[in-house]
Amino acid sequence: MQKHLTGASCVTGNDEVMGAQEGPECLILEVVFCTNAGKLRRAWMVLRRAIGLAQLMGLHHDQPDKLIILDPQTKASASLMWHRLSSQERYLALMLGLPATTLDNPCTANTKFTPEESPYDHLERSHSQIMRRITARNERIQLGDFGVTRQVDQML
Image (cartoon, rainbow, N blue to C red; front, side):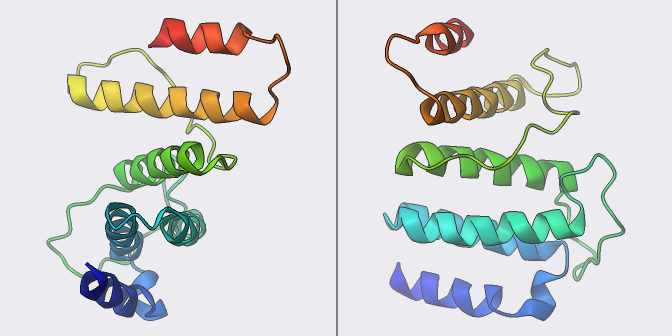
């Protein structure tokens, strides 16, 4: 696993590659490697870099800026990449007891099921929103305040 992490770091350390749409995608893969290797803090640091890069590219907006694509066969959508980044960040924030920093995208904040998405996509989006609420609750928790906990329980 360490060889894979070292190889991924060589690619993600190249700023020229990171400025293209494939850049955040490579960082997401490095986050997966780190997470699977049990290096959650390193995964969180790589993820924060990926989120910053994605925000510079405008991936957090409904209509991102014109993206540089290195490989014409790249099929990754900007909105899906942003969703993956924010979901991973919320998961790692929960696991590490850190605050989540990504906000809900207005176009993905709706919890209603839409016909163009699969049931799996809907479930994944719901889980991401629930993780955001849990981390927000954990940041401001007070003794005897179970309102948000009950709401999250109802959502689940």
